[in-house]
Picture (cartoon, rainbow, N blue to C red):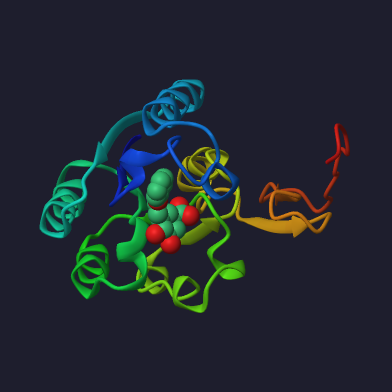
Amino acid sequence: MNITVINGPNLNLLGTRQPEVYGTLTLEQIEERIDGWAGRMGVTVRPLQSNDESELVDMIQEAGRSSDALVINAGGFTHTSVAIADAVASIDRPVAEVHLSDIHRREPYRQVSLIEPNAVVQIAGRGATGYRDAMRHLLNRGVMPFETIRYGPHPRNIGDVRRAPESGRLVVLVHGGY
Ligand code: CA2
């Protein structure tokens, strides 16, 4: 499987300011992690970033032609861009929407995503690991549906529990806090 990972406006500034909201990793470091996770999953990734709305539309259309799936953090355009939402809706490939921060616990204008209706999943508030979970979701989608459960108040106190299709039983191994 090959997955295009698109990051939108201002994500190139990660690691420079607002670490309490977006973490301390730079985009380059996040992309290195994505590459490592993808390698372990047997997935090929193509990371892209742009601050330009029309370039992002072109990237999404191109991913629709040349990739099996798309992971997108459209940054601030998530909440405002009908053009990007339309591009996501136009492609015939599964799209996973990612946000480093938990947009649902932030300002009201960030709580609305125009992309969400056409994404197969929205993952927010898990920091960089959200990209890993998005790729995992795209890889396992349809094979093993998952349910996200919360075990604490912090947005990252979550786990995705998958149930193998032929199994009537679910075993959850709790360790290291989860
Ligand atoms: O939580 C996310 O991943 C966001 O998509 C990040 C966007 C924000 O506009 C969305 O509402 C949520 C912003 C990304 C980066 O912003 C920075 C600004 C200054 C310094 C570092 C990062």
